[in-house]
Image 1 (cartoon, rainbow, N blue to C red):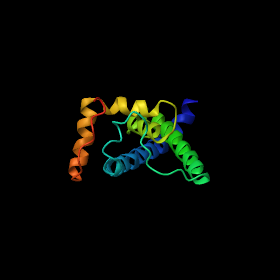
Image 2 (cartoon, rainbow, N blue to C red; image 1 turned 90 degrees about the horizontal axis):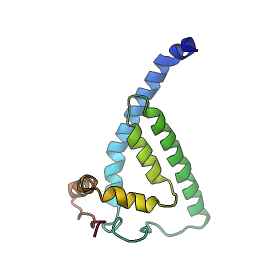
Image 3 (tube, helix red, strand yellow; image 1 turned 120 degrees about the horizontal axis):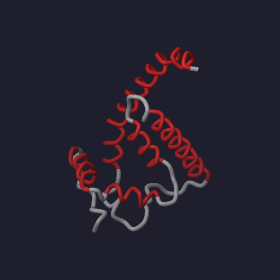
Length: 137
């Protein structure tokens, strides 16, 4: 068994490192873009902010695609926990993409942390956008 694992180890390390670099690059470009396109009151309302109109079957297909992609990101993030890479970040992105009960409360809980709130508003300031409304008020 050890021989089998050691024979695949170089390829696993190469693929893991490549995946880590791709996810890091995606996070560097995607996170600022998403933060810049969220409305100012996204985290301060008592309910989820509607970002798009319901499109019937299109909305259902989009939700299915988002949940599958989010589940894959969570699984990849779990694997990256044991390899060099952004495992926790990948799992968090996967969870935030998915739809599940309590997701909005989780988002608000995370954004209510002072460091996260400051970082999000710093990203918005870099795009000359007004800061988010504070979710704790």
